Each structure stands twice: as C-alpha cells, then as structure tokens.
Image (cartoon, rainbow, N blue to C red):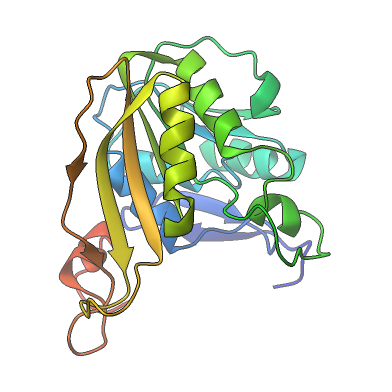
Amino acid sequence: MPETTTATEHLANGTAVRVTQKHRFGTDAMLLSAFCGVHRDWSACDLGSGCGIIPLRWHDMGHRGRAVGVELSPEGAQLLREAAEELGHITSVCADLRTLQLEGNFDVVSCNPPYFTGGFRSQKPGRSEARHEVTCTVADVANTAARLLKDGGRLCLCNRPERLCDCMAAARLAGLEPKRLRFVRQRADLTETPWLFLLDCRKAGKPGLHLLPDLVVEDETGGFSAEILQIYGKKEAL
C-alpha cells in the first residue's frame, strides 16, 4: 500500500477501520482490545489510538458506552473520526496524552505504548514515535490514566516482557495496582520466551497480582489456536 493511500478493513462483525501504511494495526492491538473486557455501557478511553482500532474493536464486540480515542497524529485521529462518524458513541481526540485535557471518570483506559527505549530508530515518518519512547513514556501513560480513571477503574496495556518491571513500577507510582498479568507466546513450547504481556492495573486497588494462563498464538499444527480465532471472530484459519 502506498504510504498516502487510505484503505478500509472490516472487523468480524462488520465495523469499518480506516488504515494507511503509517497507521495500521497488528495482533497486539487485537489481543489488548479483548483483554480489556469492556462491558457494553462502560466509559472507555484508548491512549495513542493510531487509526482507532481498539475503540472500533470494542464497538465490534458490542460496546456502546462513551469511547474516546486519543491520538497525537492528526492523520491517525482523522482516520478514527472517519470510521466513527456514523457510530455515535466514539470520539476522536487529537492531542498529546501528556497534556491531555479530558473529563475523566472512565471505567477503563487502554494503551498499546511504544515498546523501546533505545536501539535502532526508523527514519520513516511516525515509525520511530510509534515504536520508541519519543513522545511519551510508560510513566506518562500511567500518570494520564490515573487522572482519567475513577476509583476502581482499570488501566490495561501491553508491552514486551523486558519492560514488565518498568510498567509495574510506573503504574504503582501513579496509584494503579497491577492485578492481572498474562503472557503471550507464539507456541506452547515453554522453552520459547513470550513475546508480549498484557497487564491490568486498578486505580486505588489492593495489592495482589493474579497470573493468568499464557495466551498461545499457534496450535500444535502451526495454525492459529482456538482462542486466537475466537478473539478475531473467526471460525476457521485466518
């Protein structure tokens, strides 16, 4: 796809997602949207929303409460604005999450943040900001979520396993207690390192972390596992 071309993809129940080469979505966003467990009437906010895949995925799963997608890039914010135009309950906000002025009291805040703090940085426009902590850090995400959430509200995020300590420490410092943790691995082979984790933190929550069973992407035949197919809303191989 040429970088400036806009295309439309459809989720399992028909919800349209507007994407470009710069603003697309991957497996991690799909897994995070499901992990959030958003109820139909909850008030929900997605930080660093890109093309808006997470609030749109919530809609596709039946969410009809207030939903806000916050995105720094005007292009990304516009993609969500176009996709949500006729849905009624999703708002696209173009803003820096670090200085975000938004009425809070949300039930859940999600974020698929930049994963890396160092190493090679892409020279492609927007690529470095999406993958590296250039415009925000995990601490920025936690602090903003703490401002937006009501007591008992949840911050759900995903990241690479090597960033787990950073994420938990930042959450606790912001008053968000880690409550659920799930690792994602490509295969059931326990000799392979998980490539992602999903973390649920509660505002003003009591200490006590529940470790969930690993989410396995592939089954024993090399195809997608039954749980992955369920998350994608598919009855057979992708």
